[in-house]
Image (cartoon, rainbow, N blue to C red):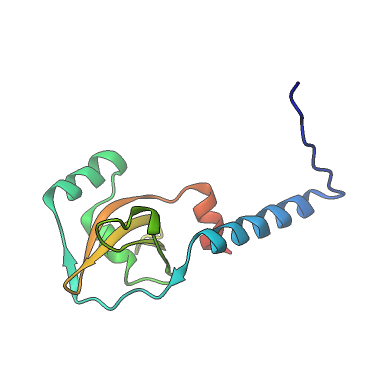
Length: 128
């Protein structure tokens, strides 16, 4: 037999406020928010440039713009940091496209691993 859980809220705004609060708590506990490491530029792998365009239609220029716009939310990515430290960043391009980028640092250069549009949950966190 399957158990169903029903949440009862007096007003719909209460549900939205609680959902937003719980999402923020979840991500703050799961993600360690950090400052962006100092960097001197970018290092690109041709394969990643092509992969990001084909899979998500994100250009190299859009990915780089994100690091110069604010707000910028940067977090460590311990789940993918087995070989080298990896980071996740939420930000926006000059045209206000909201992106999620996974990256690493190599000799003072940002190396973008993956760039895509933010998910709904990521956008909710970024906008709060």
